Length: 193
Image (tube, rainbow, N blue to C red; front, side, top):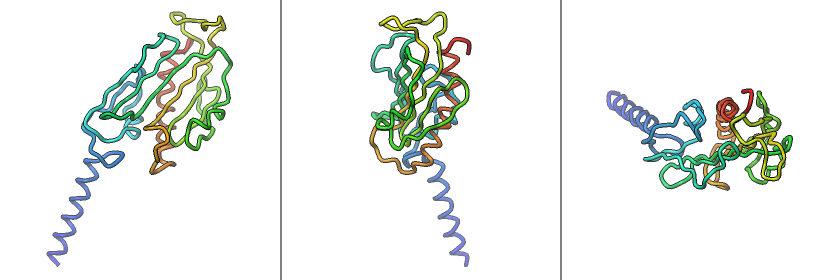
């Protein structure tokens, strides 16, 4: 009996240590979860479930942006892209997010409050159109002269086309991130926010 108890305690302890040291993907996370993504504040608890384990996290901006018109950044864990966000001004009133269904795995319509015109969340990302006129310090018209009226936010988790182990859970984590991230996007990018 004593041997069984010691064995059970040892197994429980090993499982507990394994669970504490691991993150998404089963690998230990040895970096700090960011409190900002693309210069937009967001709760760390909303970012954490989307990031895999690894030794280092860096934010990269692989090309120059036209400030106030577009932004693209990527959170890299190790050498791989873990999370990418792009923000782009649009001169139209918005487009149905479901038209982007070929860009995201199993994209489904989503509902968000605030200035959201249309949104979809998939197993590997999300796309959101916002009614978002630029702040007075940002460019007001596009290169062809049309007034900027909306902002398109695209989010990608992991590598496009990669298998998602728990799609429903992943979709919920993505939706939670978007919900936490949108107020900061509106405050940073939209007049009157």
